[in-house]
Image (cartoon, rainbow, N blue to C red; front, side, top):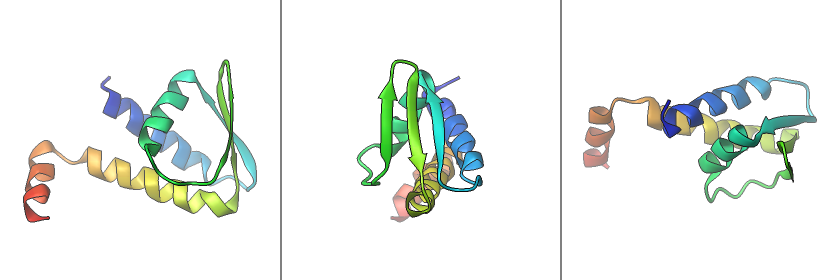
Length: 93
């Protein structure tokens, strides 16, 4: 599995979890944490993350759930397109 495929898998997992009643703690293992943070990049989302040896715990509250959802869904949309479509979109913008 490529890194992008792993990132998309984690993004889909987190999106599925966002449907839970809030607040809740999202638990990610070490690999999921790496992929999630890779997707986040330099995004400015004010969320509480507790890093630990086995991964991390993220407090998901109503105030951040929409931001996380939009960031992850945008990542999936961008990286799920065939390369030729992405290149064509780049030419348009």
